Image (cartoon, rainbow, N blue to C red; front, side, top):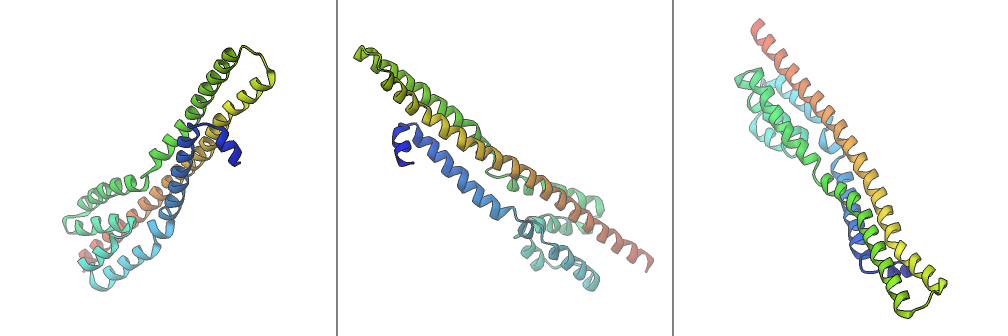
Length: 207
């Protein structure tokens, strides 16, 4: 493997950097996009308990909620709940837009890695082939062994670039799908909060 890296030329370095970036993003997004972190079910249960017992959720708890993506959305809605259901929905929609942006962080970079890696590999191959034929012309020989060796070295960057791109693209698709599922879950939880508030309003009206 080390011999392949040495044979790949200087353009193999940015491809290796791309692979390290992809690995770092993969690890970070796996940690961040956990359901238990993004939308823990305990948050909505706690809101329900507070509303049932006290009729409101205090600011201290709302601030604590805002450490989680779902909590940011719920806190935004609860802070506007006194102004009515429509104001609550509007506040949660705005908060959800910001949360979605955070969930998609670094995914553009991962997609860029998937796009640029094979291009870097192809560029390395083209440069390598140019060097091979330049050497052949300069030496005035047609040694097939030299030609075959030069071509194999030139193709190393393409192989590395495509390999990195395949993995990065697969991770990019996976995380996009993961974000979509989390956004649906957040919308469901936000809808449940609205239902709790509507139910509370109906209870107060009946009393």
